Amino acid sequence: MSFVRLLAVPWFLWLLLGADRTVAAGLLLLAIGATDWIDGWLARRLDQVSKLGKMLDPVADRLAIIAAMIGGLIAGVLPAWFVVPLLVREALMTLLTGWLMLTGRGTIDVRYLGKLATFLLYGAIPSFYLAAVDVGRGVFEPLGIGAGAIGLVLYYVVAGAYVGDAWRLRQRPAGNIGPRQERS
Image (tube, rainbow, N blue to C red; front, side, top):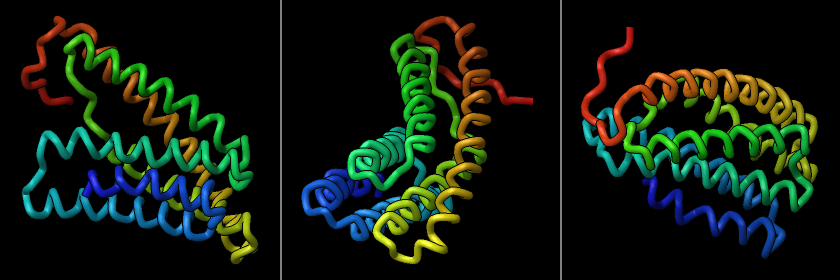
């Protein structure tokens, strides 16, 4: 499913910027977010968690969110107060995880709080899209603002936890990506 979500990102951008179909783009983004949750639930439920899936899932999440933010800013459907902090956080986390991977120090485990933040952002972004074209503006605009603000705060809280994880991993010799000890 992560691969399908990756393929949906260019379609989303075409709907938003090429075809000027903001509602369809927002609904597709909502579907991308829903399939993210379904994908994880099925993988755990069916005991089919794979290394490829663990790698593709966050990549699909990040690409979808970045495409939605940049596309939404260009199309004028997302407010800058929402987009700029998200892009800054994404850039910092990309640098951090890239450094860990390039130095062979391992990866950071996804946290539940990070999944919750992503869920809220996947709800906020389509809400802004729908409100921008006056589809239920009285419902979707406050929903986008509320879920977006809470999602932003949680995104930064969990980013702090990820930085702490990376700080601990930096002590590991380069190339040592064996099993980690359990956290206490």
